Every structure is written in structure tokens, then in C-alpha cells.
Length: 212
Image 1 (cartoon, rainbow, N blue to C red):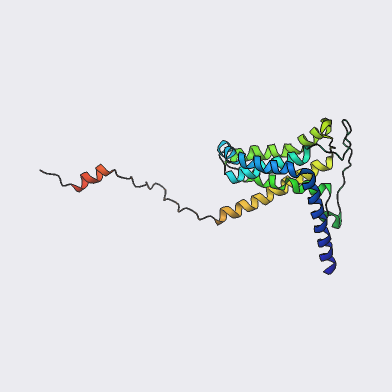
Image 2: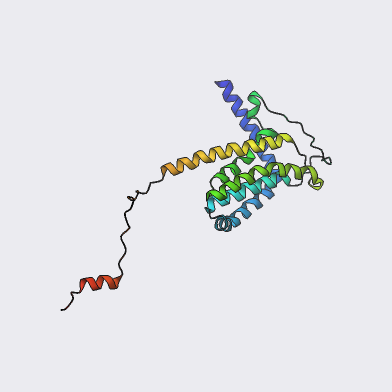
């Protein structure tokens, strides 16, 4: 048990250092993402006929993905038309530690949650399909646009798609739980008509006796 706790503590420390590096390189970009997402939340909600909190999460998660994936890098050396990194999968306890795959999975989790919370259903279906197309489009951009100095990889697409699917699964469970916890409206018996609200003039005519 102590060995497991030590492993988890070491992995958490490694993730903290990884997060510090991400904020060091992309902190300004992510701050801009938060501001833009807040400004877009209400207009997107009106456009998509959804909730501003959901559209705010959607905008923030999508813009964060774009910023972290396409912001110019000063550390990598890109090669024209080549994806340099091989497909590598962490095994065993390595999955707890920062890696390209785990980082890509976590990066797309919020986007997967956001798309399944959209309403109505037609908007949700379009958003799900569009979200699944985001990873290959981003990797193609990294491959072809050399000015951003980024490298593409098939492992990134795998991690991104897995993160999306896991996020959609988590979002669906949360949505079902939220809907189950809402108070249900009493069902109206079939064929029963709602009472018609009488106007003030109709009520007054019924209260005044008719003179013969």
C-alpha cells in the first residue's frame, strides 16, 4: 500500500511540473481563451439554442485545444510533410505519468463533455461529428503549416479521439444523473383540457345578475 501511495505521489508531482511547463509556454494563450470563451458564451447559446454555461465550456475547451495544438513552438524542429514521432503507448504504471498520449487524452475530455450537453438533439449530433473531425484537422495543420514549428503524430490523433470518447461517456452519465434528479412534471391525463383563463370582463358578466 505504501509503495502504491509513493507511486501516486510521484506521478502527481510529475503532473504538477508538467502543468507548470504548459502554463509557462501557453499561459498567455490560455488566458486569452478564457476571456474569449466568456464573451462568446451568451451569443453561442442564442445561436445554438443551448445553455450559456454549456456553450461557454464548449468554447473554452475547443479554443484551448486549438491554442495548445497550434500555438507556435520554439522547441521542436518541424519537417515538411513528415510526422516524426512514432506511435507509442504507455504501459503499466507509465499511464499515470505525463506522456504525449495521456496529455492528449486529458486535453480533449472537456470538449467531449461539452458536446453531449448541447441541446437540441440536432445541434448535439452535429457537434459530436464536428468534434471527432477536430483531431485529424489539427494534425494535418501541424504537418503542412511549417511556420508554427509543430510536429504531427498518429499517436496524437489516437489520444485525442480516446479523450473525446471518454469525455462523451462521462458527459452522458452526468447528463443522465442530472435529468434523473430533476423533479418530474405530473403527466396530464390524455384528453383532459387545460382550464381556460377567463378574462376580467367575462368574470364580471357572470357575477352581475341579469335583469328581466
